[in-house]
Image (cartoon, rainbow, N blue to C red):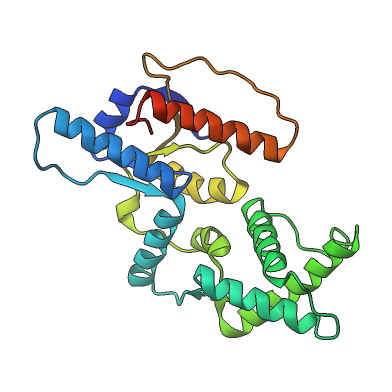
Length: 250
């Protein structure tokens, strides 16, 4: 069971200074925390400092994969990058619809890619009965089958499959026996938990953290919007007002 705790910004800064690895849910959050860390070091009067270990989850997986390639005797598959994966999905879907081509092929590829990521993240079974509820699900099941066959033939895997592949590989020693904090994850997927639990069992200190509100933070207010367009308009107006009141706001 991964621990959950609320931390202050000061505690986060101290942990990073002591060499903790901070994994964030996305690239934007990693950049934001890194900027906060840099400002804190400047406020201390420092001109140089060790680079903190702040990585989005996806980048950390890529680092683990590269380290495993170097240290493992096993032959790992080739990981497709985002562009390669999209092109492969596009090829599979287009080939299956030669007699009835889609006008919105790119949008269909994007949704198929999202579904593929969700299936692997939540470790859902890809079986025919589950995907027979409607024509769209049945079509995706057909595309996914063709996609998997092609990847297996070429010894390719997607980024959505990296964590599962790493679970079957001995992880490099440098990621073990250190402090790892997870920030910005609403809920860890079963795939993420499957990768982290062996690390935790081997002695790695892993915690899922959230930052406490800093002094002066406003109260949370729930606003009901009519639809998505209204929600976006409201968000844009609120963002503009924040920047008018404080141009340095982030």
